Length: 203
Image: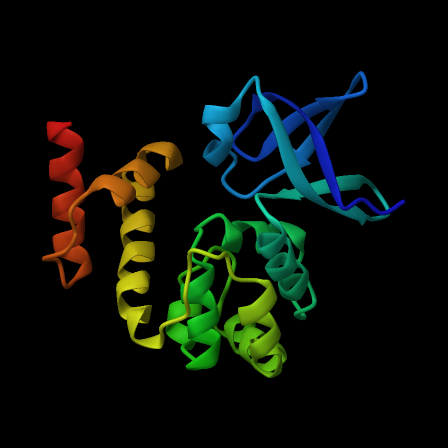
């Protein structure tokens, strides 16, 4: 059975999934950065779905919108990337930076994503460069635009997230810092970390 999406009550969130109840059944759906939906807990939501069937389990993977699902489908078509690795990439929320890195063959940028080593990054570029037009039209949120010269800034934010994570800060807190912190005068990761820590201390 193939699913397109589910509409129901968002009853719970975990670090890896959302739980959506509909017609008396509750579905555990793996989701990239579930805390994006924290303000909708207890409300009706629509989650786009992909069902993965393996020898030991049947799992549902969910997405914020159809564009996110399309990028997921392209990612799992790459040799060496499974559903969980694809979700980890999507959890960073920088589809535009990711697609720009493929376009510019920026292996170093791609290796900043969880579970992506140099060989996997090269494979991503090899497998997806020919699909760039489709990625830009189908797998890019309406509020994002692929701009290659923004890759350096996006890479810095990924490095900042990794640094804050290693310091023990929760994903939700890190997302808030990156969204609300003033990084306009920052041009390297070390300075970005200082700005982030100052924001956390003062908030």
